[in-house]
Image 1 (cartoon, rainbow, N blue to C red):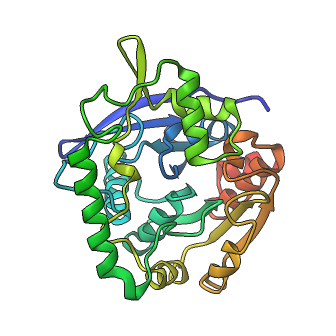
Image 2: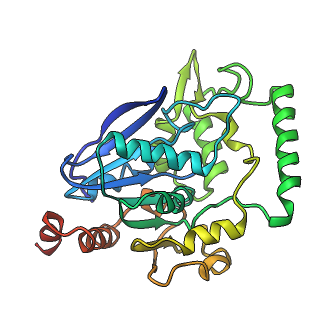
Image 3: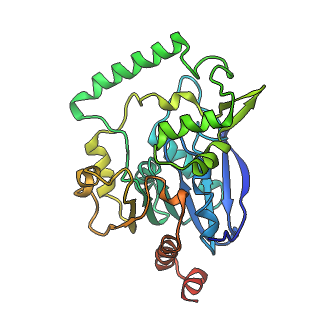
Length: 308
């Protein structure tokens, strides 16, 4: 499918934290905040973003990911902090109302955004169903202790990626791609992995290393509980659409485990592909469905484009 517009890259300085942002489309188009998943980056939307004709698609690298800043060493990475960062992004761009398009972990951030902002016109989850990493109610204290011990062990042993900047290096891009595919999505094609890695690799001497913060692979000390994750889902009041890959993360029992938490107005559809179906090969049917739902809750120019 032919892309309709090329990307533009920006760097936003938000209170000393630099957030890299990739955008597609005219700035006066329908505003769409695109949130990528865990260990991904804005390139997750490199194939879908250009096809959303009439939209202004804003895809930030979450803090710690891609080309954005890392958090201080005495801080961590929590969904609610990512949500606050994203509110700062839309405020800096002057977006009073916007749609959210969220993949994987991004849907967990989106569920928090729904509780924090009244400016969201609609939400669409791409193979995501809220917070992906949760802890049992009766395991929170033990989880906190385990995560602290793991953090200290990693720091003391200087495990791969936690030492000097060039401590975790790959001789070739292909070696980095192999790790990325194994860690994130075993079904991810080499071409799709190359798009994600291209925004997350830094050349160091005659090798390569990841830009993202290696602490992202550590468990959150205080993640949401499963009940909290479900409460956030059930309280989403704006129009909510969930699109899943038939071979994705929710093809088994995972969908049934949270289905009861969905608000009554949520709409669910299934699409060919795996967890990254939106990146692998977004087809005309997916693009048209997205444009229709955006038009339904926005109207105006986009509605005319869909009807033509």
